[in-house]
Structures are given as structure tokens and as C-alpha cells.
Length: 193
Image 1 (cartoon, one colour):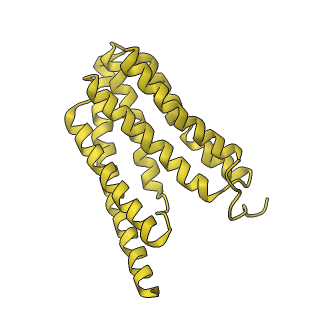
Image 2: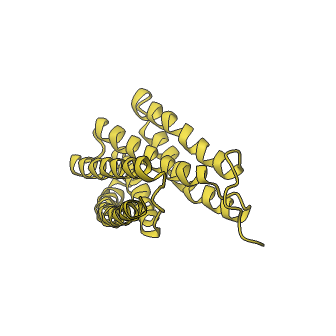
């Protein structure tokens, strides 16, 4: 199999998976906040998280790597996690320390990413450690949701809190690495101007 094309465009199976993941976020919030069905919301969040690897794998295997996909995949992750964290905090499931630290990190990442795009028309390349951090957070949140509705709370609550803390450490560490990437790209842009 040859190298994937540099840009497969918008309408690819990989991008469709990302779009479905994004479309599932309002359904998740509806289940959690309007229907008060924490268990169903947790299961949907697990599905959104479990399919995180699917879009990238499809893109690489089918030669569907695209610039749009490089934006859609992390966008789907960010929207799902922010919705789950804010929704979980509103529902009284997630602790304030986790919610606050994660949202501050997401806000900083958004400002850095938008600034980079505005100045250079480039996006930061997703780091493997960023995927690991996202994976850990994708596990912590549904564990805490399920513990809140009585599913193995003696195991899931401590496991979820531990994963939340570890995920935050990785999130902030990789955020620092993204900031260094941002600074390098901005310096390159300034040097070429």
C-alpha cells in the first residue's frame, strides 16, 4: 500500500465517523441533563470515546487522510470531553477540581490553537501523548458517571478519580508541549515574514 494522499478532501468515511461523533455530543447532553439518564449518557460517552481511534485508523488504512480530518478528530474529542465535564459537573457527578483544571487547559489550548491558525494558517500536530491523555480522560469520566448511579461504586469511583488525576497530569504536560510547538511555529512564521 502506497503513502496516503496529502489531502483526501471532506467527504470520506473517516470524516463521516468524526462527524457522527460530533453529532452524538448533543444526544449525550440530552440524555444526561434533560432525561437524567446518567447510565445511558455514560454508555454513549464510552462509544464516542471508543470510536476515537476508528476515524484515524480508517483514514490511514484507506488513504483518506485529510486536512479537514486533522481538525475534525480533535474537535470531536474536545467537544465530547468538554460537554461531559460541564454536564457531569452540573449533574453533581464530577468534582469541581477536575472540571476546573480540565476546562482551563481546554481554554488555553483553544486560544493557542486559534492564535496559531490566525497567524500561520497551521494547526498543531496531535502528539501521541495527547492521545494517551484523551484516552485516560475518556475512561475516567464514564467510570465516575457509572459509580454515581451505583454501578460498582467501591471500585469505579476510586478508579475514576485516579484516572482523572493521571489524565489531568498528562493533559497539562502535553499542553505544555503543544505550547512549545506553538512557539516554534510562531518563531518560524516571524522569521519567514
